[in-house]
Image 1 (spheres, one colour):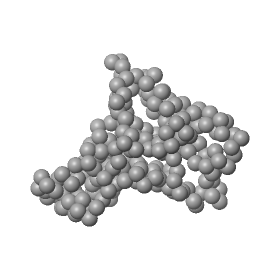
Image 2 (image 1 turned 180 degrees about the horizontal axis):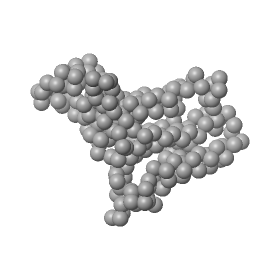
Image 3 (image 1 turned 120 degrees about the vertical axis):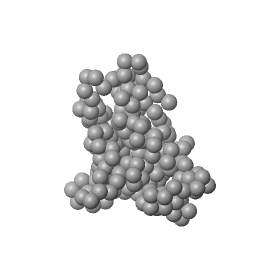
Length: 217
């Protein structure tokens, strides 16, 4: 089994989301799962410029072979898409920014949500091509977005939609309300860690660990 660990943690050591990510990564190391790291702060995804979008539609929707020059425009996005398809498990971690995904995270999803690669169309409608694979989404937020506040939450809900659309079995863990309840920060983080323990435990069967050891890069 191979895991892809995607993270956008711009606050580095000050990040509460990093606490959750490090905890999940530690569990995978203990299980000797082969891991590949993608740090979106260092490897910033390409954007859908008019030129890239034109190539994408010509190739992925039109089914046409494009020139090498045009293919190079999509090489960064293609690389991230194929990196994702090569993994059995996805862990993605990021903070909520302005009620939604950070722009860099959305750009990553734009890179990997490619027709004919991670999803497709059939006479019955949309078909996720990542069925049978699992995803764990980790995030933190200053407020609690439940009840009346749920209408303001577009980070986890959008991420779950993206991943479910591709066919993933999705689990989410959020450390919410850290700024709203600063005196409970450690309690909130510890509760999130316990939720991660349960989520990861439910993702694996006894044969899912790699006897050769963990390879994290």
